[in-house]
Image (cartoon, rainbow, N blue to C red; front, side, top):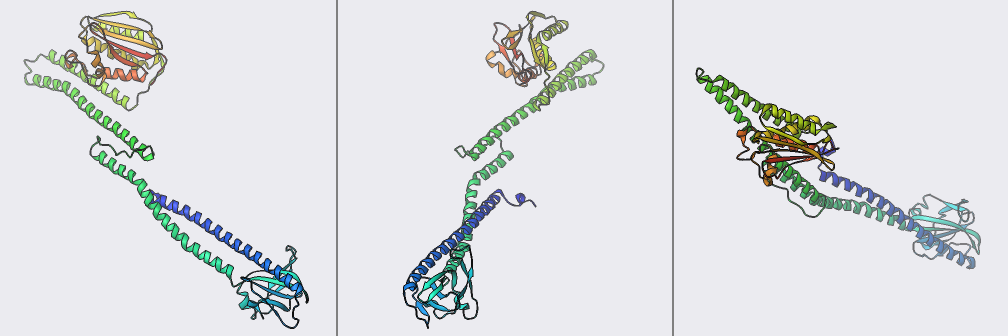
Length: 463
């Protein structure tokens, strides 16, 4: 099983840091032992050289007995042994190794200063003494008895003892330090991750109960504070989306229920009294309400695809003035309204022809629905924007409150009501199409009637 599934992030981070500290401590311990050992060896070598130099000066002028071994005084942990040049007979030795046989024999070594090194003589007579020796040097010496060899050793196992003590200290203290570090890291990570766990628990409660709640802010501008702000912003969007979805479903259900109720009531009434039923009126009612259902379903389907970003915006040249002329002919053919197109001027944009045609038609249908005698179309350029206006001479709207009319399922009361045949989706589709083309839609104040203005960038196809 993957370690990420078996261990929490707190445990994984603790393990990682403990392993990192263990590597650092191991390297530090090795370096410390090595440096201390080198320091002890260097100090011992300097001490041996000093004692050997002093002894050489002494034996070069002092008369040495010929028939017995001369005992030399001890200086610290250094012992000396002076032999003949062949290394077969002891002439003098420190008191700690007095009467001990020859401990080493000379060997040629051209890498040393004197060209000499030594080899320890290991036998039953020297074994106990050699066990106390850690380091040694050999040099030639001139005495009153003639040339000889002087050996210097560190005696008493002081270097080995120091190394052993250091090794024991390192192997004992470093694991303890590692254990303490691991505990502190575990506690520190627990404190650092506690706000994240609190946020997680709060988000779980919010998701299950109430989207209006928010996660607590920790203050500051660290990663946890930024995560809390991001989660709260996401919850704001989720709450808004949830409310919008609930309102949308409720409004859509209400809008669909009205024509269905009318259809069912008409059919039921006709079925109960077939002989006295005006079937022409029934047919007209069914066709009218059926068309209304079709418009509502088509609008809902378009908005659903828009919300899911499934509508692609085509980039081609579209003449908005041609669309206005087409709509003027359509309105004249289906009503007795006068359509004034004298202010229509060339206005070309780059955009989706189907969407822009739907936009113009929805605006014209909205104006036609509430017009009394006349519609007014206009188009022109305003800098980098193409501007289209559609006006009617009906009951006007309160311009200060008009932005809400571009919301879904919203109508103006009392004149612009459901009885006029609107679905409350036409202008919301208009504002979505305009927004997709980088433009704006708004109601413009006029002395009489209503005027809608559409502004679309001439060269921008998608927002």
